[in-house]
Length: 426
Image (cartoon, one colour):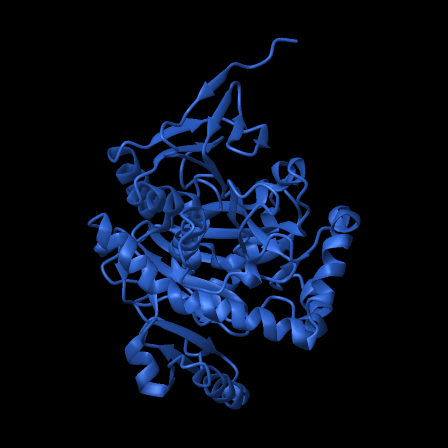
């Protein structure tokens, strides 16, 4: 068998390969460039076309609760059995999911939840300033929109729940304002009359559009001399003084950063790393709004009861929801899109219009059992680094994850305590 040729890709210890061209990988590639490295970006798909493409575009810095809590576990059977519920687990995938589910359940202990909560809060507090630095550096500040965010309830009898949630977040210095009646209608005139009350987060931000943002990041990366290889990486071979990236050839770099999202588990296992990473499938609708005289929404909206998000983006109104534990290979399920159609029409009556142009998409969120990402170096080969597993917060945490992993690469003091995000914590 013919061995692939080896291409030496570094000179004077200046080369970095980033594997994965989602928003985390793009931010990481740019951050490495800022510090003088020559960067090659690898992905079998086009930049920004993976999980990053389907994001709601909302920077959800107030989401500091891990996905596994006792409250969620208690509600999970009901959500799973509800045909319009936010949780799905196809029966055919259940046997494969059981090991991950067992770890997920163990992550719901009180001590582990508190540990994950503190770690999520740390990243989320640093997220917006990191995005501001990233976008200011590339002259693209307009891609970050100070939009505010509304978390809405339809049930009047859940007013105390909203007040309790606001009080809890206030303990973490997360500001929110309770809105009812005329104040709520003024914020969002198109919301259904069934909406009773909401918490408004005045400091919340969204991006102009996740895919447009990814395209802009990639354009600057290329303009600054970055190289993109659209090819599948089959092997990662770490060595003492270099790391080889195997595609149809062998490419040797001083450092390699894996930002492979839900697809990276086989590459990790090749290097002796095993992590409980699951492909959590998410669904979205995008409704074209360019020809509408009045906007459907002014702010991103989350439903506390229906568990989905709607966000006004440059590409249209994005409707995002469903947590489906289904791996990488199963086809999408049309009924999941219908669930999103149902819920969005309940909150926005103007969507009850068959003439609207609606597109559908399904992608894979990289979710670890404890809801925390990996931001670390290989314990045996420090030239191989990792930034992946940000679950629903990939867009939110992309810029800060990039800064942190490149600080490790540079042997600089990181802004955050990285102990919670170790790759060998499992």
